[in-house]
Length: 261
Image (cartoon, rainbow, N blue to C red; front, side, top):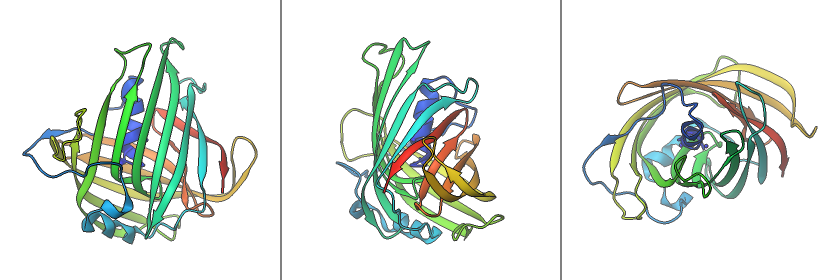
């Protein structure tokens, strides 16, 4: 959901998990800190700090996909509770701008939750700039609010791409963020994140739910820890042909329905 980044990604996925009361013990935590600069307006590749641009060194290919549609399913039930649509808007060197719009139902279908996020990500799985708005007009007690996050310092080690089973990489980064309604240009918290990636499986022929062929994908296992010692593990699928993440899951899974190139 940088979910996470978070990824494209991690942070967006955590918002969904929190709302669904499915968040495992490693949800990213925040720590109050001094007033520090934070980007304003919509996330753009041109707004990336130099440290964040350096994460293009992970080697993710430029995406060839324009739009992806996912079914959202709690792993515990396997039933669809809604959909997420990701639209890629612009590209930079190793980065892409993303708009994600999600609608899903909780509480036995009584509460409809909507979210809209914009991000600059690496491969759809690591968010470097992100804004998000989540709301529920019929169940306001379940969700609501805005958040803004920016990677301000980062370094990477190891090799992830070109993808091969056994490849590993690690990213250490600092995030400035704000959970206020106003776009003030200053962060209200800071957190430090360590994230590791390991390619654990190659799937030679992967298909979307509608039967569209995606071709070769790799399953990547990720471990994330924050500056407060919280931990979380999740997995995502990455398509070499599309140059993008095509599925992810913790307690909430995103299943690819279809895509447009």
